Amino acid sequence: MFATLIASTCASSIIPQITAFTNAAAAASELFVTLDKQSLLDPLSDMGRKGGDNAQGNICIENLKFAYPSRPDVNVLRDFSLLIPAGKTTALVGASGSGKSTIIGLLERWYLPSSGQIVLDGFEISDYNTEWLRSTVRLVQQVRANFQNSRSRLTDFRSLHCSKVASSITCVMAWTAINTT
Image (cartoon, rainbow, N blue to C red; front, side):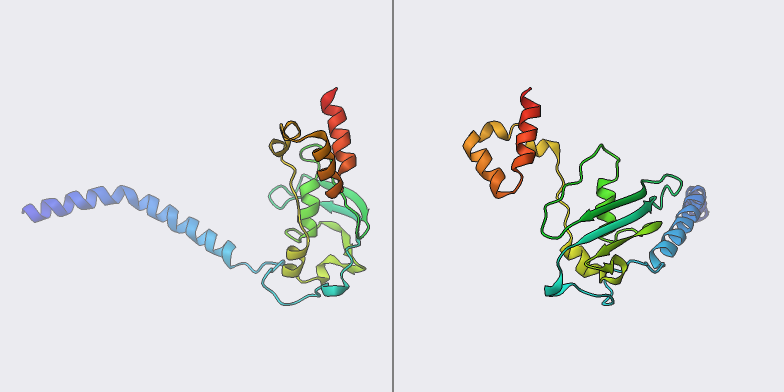
């Protein structure tokens, strides 16, 4: 009799949790479907060209249109075109949300554009091996906190020398003029 009482108490405490178990199983099922989906941008694939020693770095972006998969109704880029010559330092400057990081994400093939094309050294970017591309193209984020008070720690001479070495003298001079007025 006592064993029946304990068994019924245990069963009554488990029954309310059956809904949570059912919800968890349904969520896991959806997650596994997503994880099992074959990616169009497989970074582990050996397919695609690798630039190797012949890579120059000429980038031509023509009429690019893009919306993130999570918000397909909001275009981040509309008919965007840009020519980036090899061997030149290029900075993408704009307000937050203007598409700067998106362009780099498309160059590194984290996403596919809705329309338009990106050409690297005369070949469509989709022709390149994704792993090679991601190990070659780099993004250097400029976080404002990295530059706060940094000029006050350097002498003017040292600051200008570092800027010349980094090929950013024009940017630093403009930034100094803006921040000292």
